[in-house]
Length: 141
Image (cartoon, rainbow, N blue to C red):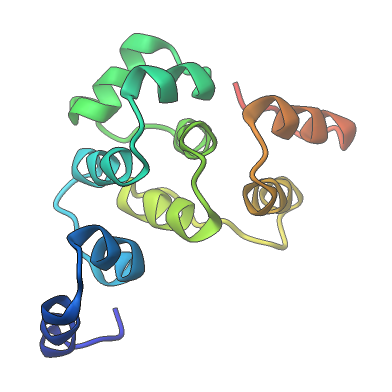
């Protein structure tokens, strides 16, 4: 968080839509839960949970527990799979990992480098796993 609350209030006052504010100031916002952040992302990107779960290749029951806030400490890999399923960018994914109490993406880590590269390219989960496989790195499953 780099901006003061007063600065954010001023920015918010001048925004034409709350969607623009959320999108542009996402790094400045504080979320009370992982479920709250996921709900914001779903609304912002106009996604359906069922669609995201399918693209994420996460067990449906497990995924709904995450979305509903009933799953404590979901694994880092599951959060990354959700990020790809939602089409998140690197900054959104890093925020997701932070809120989920998972370690940040680290460009010096070969596996994380693949994730960062694929997030920047807008890759889907199949493409990510193909690239991980090409370099004999652990797949997302």
